[in-house]
Image (cartoon, rainbow, N blue to C red; front, side, top):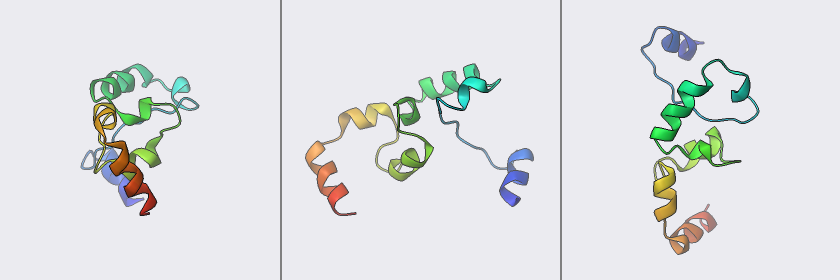
Length: 81
């Protein structure tokens, strides 16, 4: 509840994330898509939603970062989890 109060009070900012099942119903779809596109947000990739984005955000923050990763290092990292 405190997080919701911070968001409403504008002391906490949230990041948009694309969800094909929810976003198409939302009034803010176009505004969010512009922001997501400008940021090359990972949630624009099908099935890579908000939880997965948060899981890799420290290492892979954008679609551009994802395109540049070394697959051998990524495989080794994933196997370590």
